[in-house]
Length: 538
Image (tube, rainbow, N blue to C red):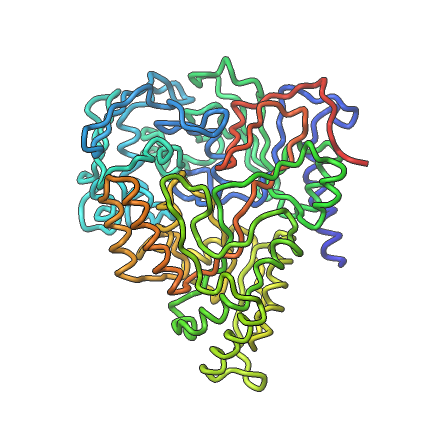
């Protein structure tokens, strides 16, 4: 208890360090926005990040060929226009005349440089696999072909030609992702990885990083050379890590932050009663799941994986522990994904829990485990209050089938590299779709995927994904992907637990916030109305 109180107090003091003058008196400066951002980011370099909270920050500084509109839908960004070949394999982008924040022109060559850089096998970029869509992307990332073989060419400074491995009807959404952002070639060549530090950072987006105090805040200031600077209303955006979501809620009520990403679910009833208009809970294209390290024994045994999947009471987690209204998940691809028929599910979806538990215990007995012989393992979790509560609940559930779990808690900067490097037994994970397509979820379990934490590998699964990629007919493609999902679910490398809602608190005086399925509200579209009262509860 002492540790929690001290942590909360420290978090509040840190948040207060960036409070805005006058906020306690109900006056909100139109020039400043303070955004609680969940976890601490690892980098400002788009090639070294993987979390949504990191994409929030970097996406305020860099603009891809397309960019997020006010509602999260793709609009022209660094490219003003484009055309596609009849077979859907070649895209030609015509660059918008615009500048880096140091006054140098942004050119097609910056994109070629950036895409070759992220695929450099020595870089081990967590999202390098994202560019496997580009012709020869996978071979370049494995070192089998030189970077020059990548299917992206700068015809001249203002024309970029991109050749794909297969048609991608989601291409404009695909290009919203930070893995496809440009980096300033002239600065990276001069500074190396140090280009991404404030002071060296050069941006082509609405904001430029000015200051980064680790575990405290990142300050972004308006970029006067941004092509749409005249319509960017907020001059300074401060992102703060808010791992302690309870402390973040208190800070928001005290007027120290204006928006908060990730909420303390244990306070959901209070929030619904006291700040209903600030609370933003909406369905999103995201899934939470438990991942098992299939490289380690006994998780190589499908009976162990199946027993764990059976004993997890998803309804209890969703409706009694978190209580956000999120539906329990018995498949991996969220409902509502475009061009996808669905239908895949784990075989026990409609079983009563007592039957699931009995089957799980039977499988454990087959492997030699029981009341007198427990299996001991570890479960990795982040430090947020809700992930800790979920971990404790899973620990109790697994004990029912004679699995003793030690919970290992790490902050985000340690946790995600640990998953990336396959250094865990069991772990909690979640995934927000990079674009509205089933492939962004199913590719996670593809052999060699950078976010395939448990190192699942099934040649038949990979073959179905490849077949779907080569299928132009969207209906047939969706049917093939559904077969792939069912095959993967039957292997139990992951256990989906619930489909996620957005978890944002947005003060009513923050205008321009439009809920969307990707949960991206870029700061360039927001503004502060100093006349609107905050909604902070009693």
